[in-house]
Image (tube, rainbow, N blue to C red; front, side, top):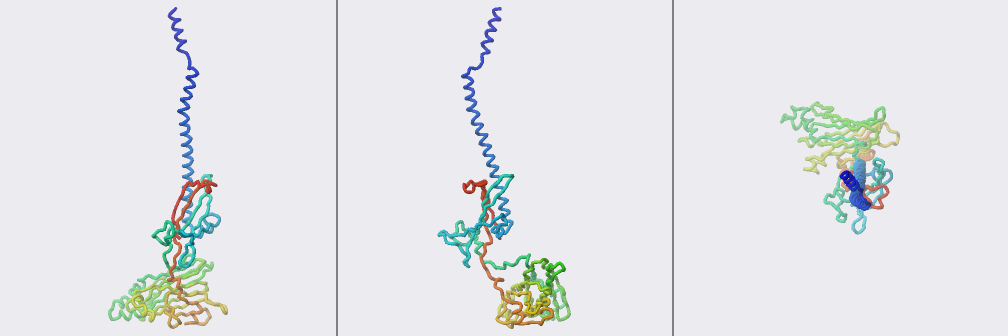
Length: 403
């Protein structure tokens, strides 16, 4: 009995709880451990949120760079990439003087602010296009030895397939045609020279409108000799179909490139029966014969150009204007081009009369060289919405745009 009571007393002593002091100490220890962990969790959450914003900003900025690269510089400046025109920023040297090209035209960079939406979140982007890096001037910061924008290049700005038709002869076309038209004469030593000298070539450009008013341009090349052999047509090409034709570029070789080839057996005929207003560019490709003896070539080479148009009202001028890189001399006799013009029911005009009617001129734009901004650096800086002034930049993306 006494033993049982002693065990009960021991059991009561062992069941005693924590004291208040022990509880408070435990809570302090727990707080010391948990608070830094909670702070780490909050920091990680904020870091992840910022990383997500940076990723969104980077993706949106890269997409904007690609959009700018896909459109023209003019679209960026006038509002094609985003509504509103770009700000024009004159480029200056270290002393603050405007940078200009050889003609005195100032260089500019262009900048605009664009709003970007990503998954319901809005960002502000500042996009800049600048030709500065590719200019040949030591005063430009970050200048490059690749001075593409200062290079002198030929200026034929209207060579656009949307408004132009192109007929381009291959250097070997004449040789292949002359050989195949009369192979026996070409290979016969006794007949070769006379045969080649007798070969005539006619290049024909037909400009017509179809019933839907679309303009179609076709080019044909034919060959003949004095033995009655013909290659007509030797080949023909559809050069243009559309409703915005402004120019026809005819790039041709010369028969004197052939050994014994004639200097005066070439004819170019333009048929424009629907009176489509068009500028004809007659571009003779330079030959080895011309290069070796340019004075002799200019004195002896002649090409006949016939321009035929539809009926005209009294006083109505020609629809075609002729531009060429060939020597036009000081008068119709001295010119390499023997020009003829005739409208339907009209009188054939030749020489100076045809010159004036077709406004024949040796246009320096076919050979003129000029510097132009062909390459722009693109920089896109992305900010949180409304934070551009605070400088809280999230991402910077760069690229290059060729004009």
